[in-house]
Length: 405
Image (cartoon, rainbow, N blue to C red; front, side, top):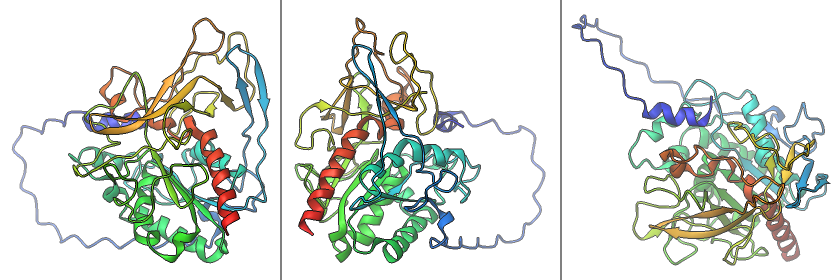
């Protein structure tokens, strides 16, 4: 089930009721309150998609082929191997976005292709700079997302950041701190639903508490982070500021990506708040100090995103790519902008029809002129388009953090 299908289902007209007079409904027994879900046991290794120390792909979702073909503007190809760092000095705690196709409001704890794919798209490559911990959790599914989309001015922080999905991530976090952290620095990484859950986790469990000293940074991606206008701290988080330099620690990177040619509409889900005193945030990991910069993207060779696989054109004329990933230096640039009180990462595709390299990328939730495209932008590849930049920043933050410690 495509993410787009979930969105489209919300917009379908409600069926007309049967015009016949309904029969009387017999009295029904009073509904019994639902038994609250039992907590997961995060001391059990099977509750984790990724955990350090597991070396085979059948046991750990992060143990996959991340080799990349670098496609230069002249069409030449260079192979880039991926090497995880088993001695990484810090950890990463990753919470994945809405991807479950389970046919219930919340997912189960069975690992499906959707969970395996999102680890491949967003998490596994962080093993180059940190040790990745990625818990399974009973997330709100694509089916369950309809409730938020059908709610005018629905608050995604409240929607995702409360309930069993939040409780699972909180329990996994506490289990990680108790059993695995051992005083190490940790980067929090989340996208979309995962990012909104992290916002509440930081607010409730970290911000202003002793454990905050171990937070190297928080990558709160593809989600709105409320911040007072003109300031970098004081909204959702009281003492964790936005990042402005790659060697700054204890700070937050936050953005949602939109094409320069398809800016967010007034009905977008990202980059704005209902409170006129606050606004959305944008910190470009390619240029934390501000301004435009080249985005170091890692894109799936087949066009796969976190939820679907649109067709892609050949990455270079007459060339075959035999790696699962491609990198396209110089093709994408990004800068943080604010238009109509909406703040976002504006992505420009610098295609050149005269060279043999592809001139376009895929990853839109819906292509223009669909209004869904301007609501969601490049949400499906928010993380992919800056993955190399994020890795560079985390590596520098890890060095700064360990030096201070």
